Length: 218
Image (cartoon, rainbow, N blue to C red; front, top):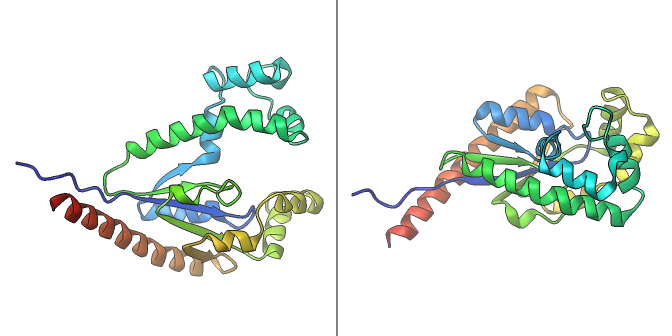
């Protein structure tokens, strides 16, 4: 007779300030075997043409937030919500539950012993720490972030500074970190550090699975 199901899934929250290099760390973790759930990507998917999410947004904000091809006009919607906290709250009340539901669906389809990495840009800002077993913060100095945003993403310095200022402070992010990945380093050093972190995450997942097995066997 089969025993209780061993479940060692580890839920990891990955965050970092804009321009800190979180996407590169995500890519490296996936290379090691992590299952990635990207909140930004899901947020785009749930308001794609033909979805109930897009219909709800159009109903709440009017047809002017739709482009000629029926897709969401993101700049137009952004100009409405970012100038008005109440309208932003309305948008979040539509999108956040859809993102949460899709994230749980993806997580539930992962292997029982998977290390599931949730890439969440606003993890600190939205007080989401309790949702994860481990929180990883990708850290870089503000001047490094500014350089990457202007040089690599083509932002103006004014726009880059405004985006950075709209997020949690570096100190607030570091306060919530279980693991910090310093990304003010060359790529080979980053790769080594992510390898070390991955080994740590696998150990944590195995310990979690072992603990649950022991608890369910008593």
